[in-house]
Image 1 (tube, rainbow, N blue to C red):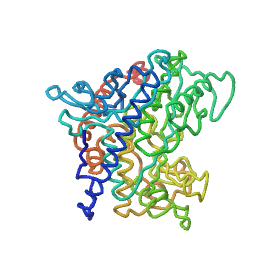
Image 2 (cartoon, rainbow, N blue to C red):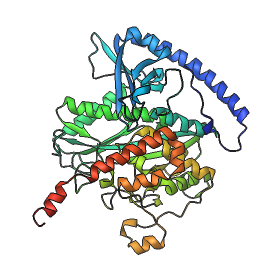
Image 3 (cartoon, one colour):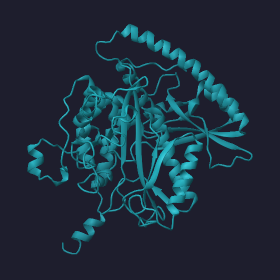
Image 4 (cartoon, rainbow, N blue to C red):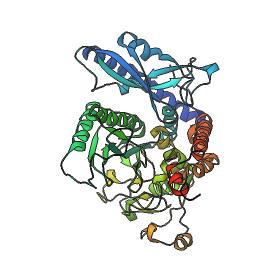
Length: 475
């Protein structure tokens, strides 16, 4: 099933014929690699005694979807894909055009470690979604990210990301009762959560997902496992797997894990600080040994693009009503459009763990939260950064003082803007954004906005505990 390259990813001024020849060559190489990968999967499934293969994909909101096939269907699935009804999947097809095809990506084949292996092992593969005639489905979030990565590849860039996903452990899904009352980097008995993190990491590594760090976060019962930096498509797949594994391990031990951005009032919410860089071959395009902060012209343009377009991409990187309970001043949450080298109060930070080291030079966007759709979030982040590079945006000077401590007048005088304060504000900004529309494509763009408007309408009609406690005794 051959994928067609959308002409919309061509950049102005390119030799389109040369580019098409390059892409055709690339597709031939990819086709041969896919053939080898399929043979590997069939061999591996037989060797490992796999009976069931779960085919994974995501809806527009980033919820993992799955159906299972047996190994008897595996070869056909790898060749032709497997049909399914897309009419009940959020943002997919209408009832009158519901037939869709999930084509497994053989490079994502992994055993599912928490399922029994003695007799009938279980494996999983991520899928790309197509119409029955073989046309790419533009509502597939994985396709959206691939499209944006091809746009970057057209000018020689590979996009690398390293997200830090924070989450909470609670006693169960019906309460916010903590498992511990520890703080940042604390290690104190009982080490219930430490054991949960340990088991989670072992499973992730068994599934081929590299882990760099794990530790207790700032809030009680809040934790973080940092995945090893890799290309954006692999990382988006890894994020989906990571969230499932964290929840699965918690459930196996009778507790509950949540990636809800702000489950508890008065303590830090959970973020997904995302480290980003562009590479050309094995060279980090963000690095310049002679420049201030070692940031190249490319890095400065990318950073300026993120700063300028951050408000309009926020509904994608922070897509829930609850996301904006986290994005308030204090609690280490970034709300002001500033950047700095060390200050964690700013929207964008330039990490200095290894100053002057080429491979480590990157930018860190601190606003996204771990409940977003990673395929769409990485897409709009990349689009914003590329826009800054292509249009030569000027990077404002870094923030030299804590922006939280400035008065509103000081911030206004310095031209420091803010992120939207609610999902409604964020939607209105996204709705006007040509950049987001290009990055997501019309199908995802309009469907996503429609869904978020419905969510906001449902939310604003609710009577909350706050209102009952505040008003019922006095009105």
